[in-house]
Image 1 (cartoon, rainbow, N blue to C red):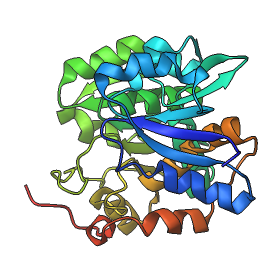
Image 2 (tube, rainbow, N blue to C red):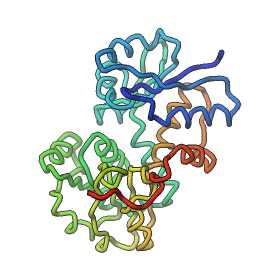
Image 3 (cartoon, helix red, strand yellow):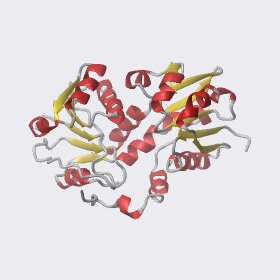
Length: 287
């Protein structure tokens, strides 16, 4: 192997589908290179990252639990990583580490593809959850100039902290206020694990949503979550979590291998082929 080699860093990391994505693109584009899993224990992550520029890797994706550690170590960060406080993509430039958070890019690109013009009425978005994923999506929605990004979290204090950290247009609302704010929403996004295989379902009624509203879910196991199924049964446009996963991988590949890849049905099929049958079901696991 004489071409560039990148990796995904995590603990554990064998479950990551990033190698499937990047190897598909390397093959499709006829590029010499490789992409590998790299398990790194939490106690070793700082040293591993500080030595990355002198290793055989040209860069890396970073997954749990190392995104915040990468934020602390990588000296040069893009605007998204700076605002979110987490890094998921690293590359080497002039001998130094550069870091980005591509979750907002992937989220926005996925909606652009799945629901063209979804942000034409960028008035109110309702974002469910206040964890690390929600932080990135809130930042992305603010970058698309939404008038209000309402963060609903079961622990209101955590939603308020996210709103305080990011500032306007992000606001916190109580979980029991969701029904009250859906009538004005042009977008609803699930950034929690609810609805994922093995997790409780997300019990949100979409009856009050306007007919032009778009619904998105970052969960991709199952691919068609109950939330997305409910949206489509109402005739609403929807974007699934797999699309976000694929689109967020594009910037890293371009940095490491020098070519911008495309998210295609073939790539989607390649990743879908690795999911367990129950991950494709619309049925949630019971409580």
